[in-house]
Amino acid sequence: MDAAALRALQAPIKERYKADPKAGVVTLKAAGTLDDTAITCKVETGRALAVAGLHPATGGSGLELCSGDMLLEALVACAGVTLKAVATAIDVKLKSGKVAAEGDLDFRGTLGVAKDAPVGFAQIRLRFDLDTDAPKDKLDQLLKLTERYCVVYQTIKSGPPVEIRVTRV
Image (cartoon, rainbow, N blue to C red; front, side, top):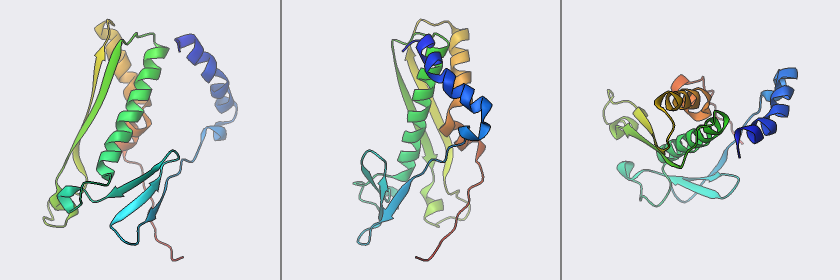
């Protein structure tokens, strides 16, 4: 897909959202089922069933997906797709590219071993390795726009309010 095709694809969508701002608000959903025999949660991904469990650093077997890994994978996926869309829109030719994310966790926090240890990632690093002839100013623009428009990156960075509750069924 080139820049013109991307603009043509997105133009009617953008016009609809300009005319009706409420149409641009979409509620994404995820659902899972708690396993009654193991410490796992079966997450419905829309494409396959993903079974998440404890990370080996907290006693897990390592056979199930770790939700921390899944968060980083979502970041890589979103950042990669966003970067490709931006590169297409601003006409940066990419011969190839890789996206990597890594994050530092202190599992003492999630296990309640040390009250001063944070629960969650202390730092996340996102890296793009691109094979391109684009000049530095275009790569700077590519990175700036990718950062601006990547939903998962902005969500992690901004930390929106999260409502949590339990209901009896």
